[in-house]
Image (tube, rainbow, N blue to C red; front, side, top):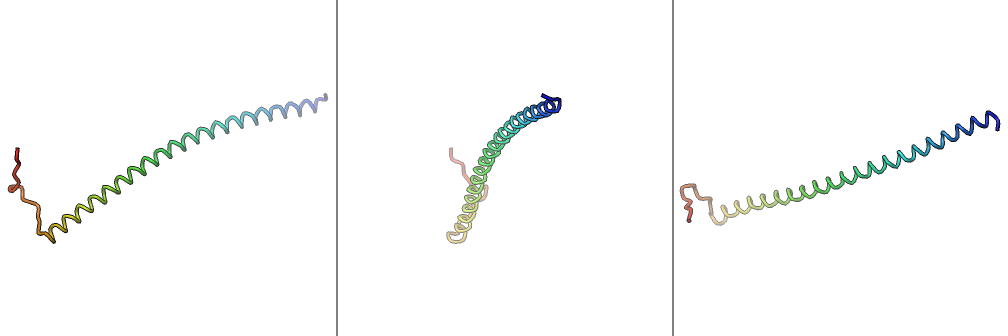
Length: 89
């Protein structure tokens, strides 16, 4: 082999090794990002569940206010004063 062929062969071997290292690094990075994505999705699911619970609680509290309004208007009910409350043991 001539000196020029040896140079090209060396260059190609270095390029193949660098390419292999780049592939391994890209696969590692891909796996790391996938793990992070799964963690973010799990966090999103937890936040969505909490949002649903808060929406349900808000709807429940709104319904209670509506019931209190109807009780006051239609049935003339009212909340007793503190001195009217008797605790039975």
